Image (cartoon, rainbow over all chains, first blue to last red; front, side, top):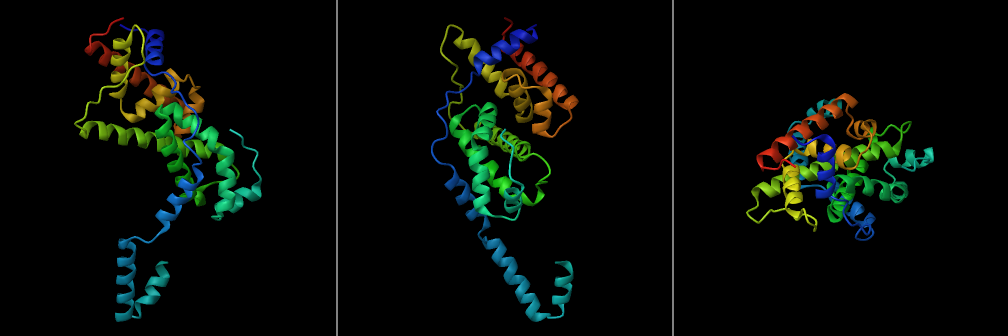
Length: 70
Length: 177
């Protein structure tokens, strides 16, 4: 049976702190890129919007229902 | 974490002001990255997780309670992102046909360390996170509990389960040092 101290010692030696020289560069542009990518409309978003617009054209009274739920 | 932040800055962040968010990013980037690196133990992965964590923070900014510590909130998000990274890495390792042997550090016990590292990777990501922070990094249970949004008792229980699983796996590998 491995005791707790020996197990910790083994883990620390098997998984030592990685050598780190800091970030690979300025990461802020990557964060911004991520925000902008995700905020763009996907095909699914556009399809849903088109379907809602079509339904509203066919049934204008549905606008009140939609407004209520929004 | 440095957490003396202007309330106005936080208010602007919550409203979606990217300039305010950049100020927060610059202020917390190093601390968050250090924390993430403790969990994922790979500088390149730490960069990816950091970007993911700050993106999640921006996406979830409406849920931020400005009366509470931004640093602690950011650390929770980063911990979740790091755990998700470990999950993805585990899925990748399972599906990959490439040689997945883990490179152990050089030294006289290299074989033993490779076995220990391999046994560690068999833990579930949630156990890996607590085991890394508690057993390797020796962070206080209260700090781990806060980062994982769990009661301290749950953290202790996970550490116990991780320790038991590691002992079992090492015994299975024939390691009884």
